[in-house]
Length: 368
Image (cartoon, rainbow, N blue to C red; front, side, top):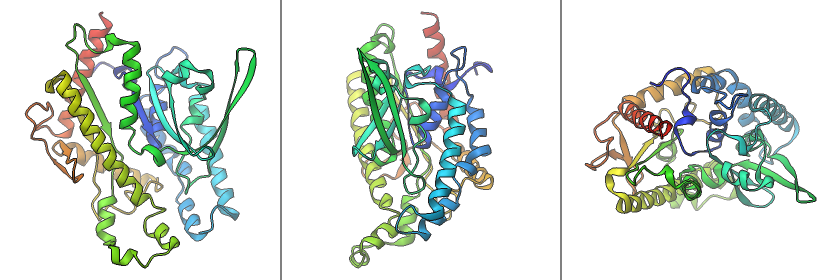
């Protein structure tokens, strides 16, 4: 729309990501030598096709279930080998870029295993405090703890006359915020407090929120297993872990429910305060069918064949009508709100409409 030099990061005031979304966020906003976005969206897509199988080898999953007592033997060596490959390759791509240097403010969530606390790394905090200004490559390398060992790194900086060291022992931020939407609201208030001009010229501004999911198979898996209170009452700890995939089948849908409630509350408040026609929210998420809830939906099957299958899933999603999540049930339903600008659109039409809004806003800002 805006030519070959256009980059996604130039059109947003804030980009947030968790897990693989954190890596994409980092790659979208990492600057090159001219402070232009280093990667195009197409180059990031090619990165996953070219290196996904090396970063997320299926052997990791097979080895884990063969060794229920944890990381041991050849499994550790295998994980460390691929962790080293991932770290070296991502660091090569992102270089020495730090959180404070992204061309657009970002936030990436991790979880510190030692401190038992969530870590929200952001451009805003990194600019305020040198101890919260790690390398982008360190922040976005954390992956699911049952597939890779945790990642350790340090931030060293001089504060006044004192040399300080901040230590991190991180695992995937999905433990805390699988969907980082709530994080974005907190970060946005920080950005707006420093840049009040961002929200409109003359008080007539609009807000566009785009939320991209990586697909959900929770409901399809539940239908296959048909877990009941009677059947679960017979489980011990091992069966709880096995039947719920390390409890992720429990806490992830629970997290999604809370994000859905919070988002609905925030959006409703913003619309009451600013007007229903000034807050635009687009959520794109695939709900995998029971047939897809296996290889296609698995987060560590990164073969080119499976990635092509995911591309097809995405293309099919674009052809579908825009849906919104029912805050009570989590089910996707047709948009009925007359004030919703995406009502009646296919997802492809909605993306085009959003792109037009973003392009218009960027041109207006460049001329003020």
